[in-house]
Image 1 (cartoon, rainbow, N blue to C red):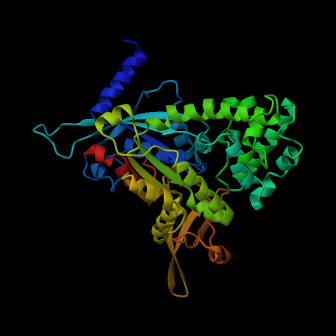
Image 2 (image 1 turned 180 degrees about the horizontal axis):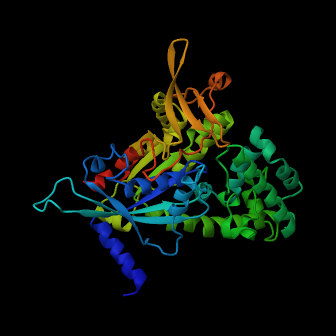
Image 3 (image 1 turned 60 degrees about the vertical axis):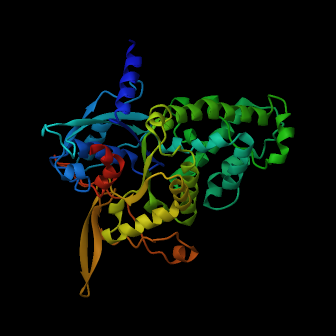
Length: 465
């Protein structure tokens, strides 16, 4: 039997026995996916030893024996760079691992004792856990599957040309694209230049804290850098009632050329990415940098809300029978986590979860209506601060102690997190500042975290019974 076929058959048998789980770690850029995956693997590797996993019953009861990295299912996909990430955290001073720049995968075999043992008290079982990582920028392209070039141009028109901080970031592109008419003959060099202006605007918007940025591959092109498939952009001022006129233009017109490139991008870049990866997941965790959006201000916060709401519509959720699980996989359990909980004091963690739930109110309603188990929580995959108290005028107040990215040791109260979506008055009176911290120095023990064990319990705990 050919090796790929044998491997797929083995996977099918393990899934039929409910001993294989595929977990997608999802999040927009800078949400902390690499840190989450690194810590998850490290905690499971240290289970029963230095790892603090009290919120995971299998670990708390002493039944979790540990995990081992093994050869992954798809040998054509790069392995998640766990060793490199751990090395970065172990440097002096420690630094955060390099962010995700492509698709990667890692397979763990988790060994545990079942909660209800048979006559053989030493019985052990194994769960195969496949972990998937991919750039947050690429996630933003999934909604393109619901748009053709004309409708996409209309949505982008309202984002890049209607004022606000984002407006200024696309000034060069707006000046350049204003010289084009849809019925002009397409000039390859001109289109490439204007596409680069558009990509530069997207990069500036990302650096400024915006999240709803398309196309995602313009931000992280990888092997497509310089290819004509990435040399398109929206045309301002188009409307759906012009469709027949626009589609009747010559094939070498600006409109038809850009529409053809967009269609190719959607069909051969976005769609295969979705089909080959997202449709195969069993469980998912969505990581959200709520604090970063709060720091960036109301326009960025609203932008994050819009990006997440659109993104959540791109995934297939729903309960599955065994046959459906084998042949038509759908995500049947979901965690939504506000990351960097260690950047606020502990009494703010509940408010952080409430804000996350408010931010995703509409998607959560749809998920609950579909009877998909979902849990919202706050966590810090790798702690970067210590909780402290300070006394002023006889009153004790919570504070955080940590080292900023530039090396300054600070003791501060970052501010209060709103428990509901901020209104205009909140932004006028807000007085918080959530600085970025270095990770805490890492020794030979397990990485310190906040509630990563709770996330593990929700995502895989039911398979460790």
